Image (cartoon, rainbow, N blue to C red):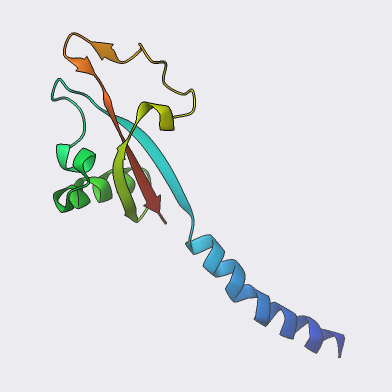
Length: 102
């Protein structure tokens, strides 16, 4: 009887653990440099043409696809990038957030 109860409980809870594991997401913040050596401008603008670049970036980090991508402002980045660290002759870097999904 205990075996049947344990088996039933495992059968009920296992799908919940599988869906949580498959829904793993991580957001990467990357610089989109104004000197044309940054990521694709479509990513920074959030345009549909950036989907391929975002997916390729996620796949390079061992994720399956990009859930979303968008430009982020400096004040959205919590202390990771000093205000003057990425400003140069050509202006300040723009940043892109790419949310990757497994």
